[in-house]
Length: 130
Ligand SMILES: [Zn+2]
Image (cartoon, rainbow, N blue to C red; front, side, top):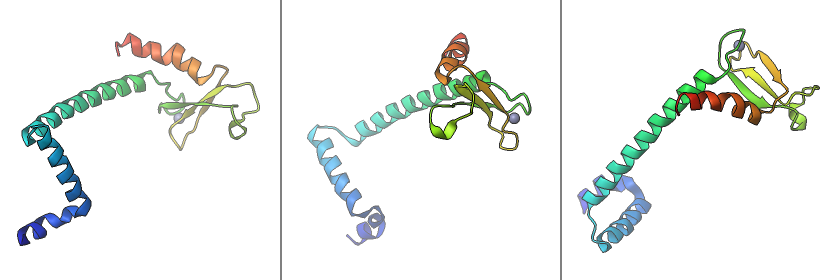
């Protein structure tokens, strides 16, 4: 018991409670720690695959994003004239804004963010097969 308290006390009361509940449930279904390890390995592979797909999509997305004509940084696309805080005093529905804080070049658009995404960026992504 001394070794247990010395080595395992770091996990705290709730972790021990959760472990007992988990272990009793596992045992109740006739499952073992090896089943848990196999499940985690399978889930880990799925998560890794999802992360790789996401990385490829982000890379393709960044290639498709508009580059700043001033500094070549990626430009972010934002809605404007939708609320009192983003009024531009013209008929713009969206704007490209340079992500470089030292530049902040801005291009106003008559098309909405959704329309631009649908018409331009998603088509580029689809052409790349993602
Ligand atoms: Zn810029």
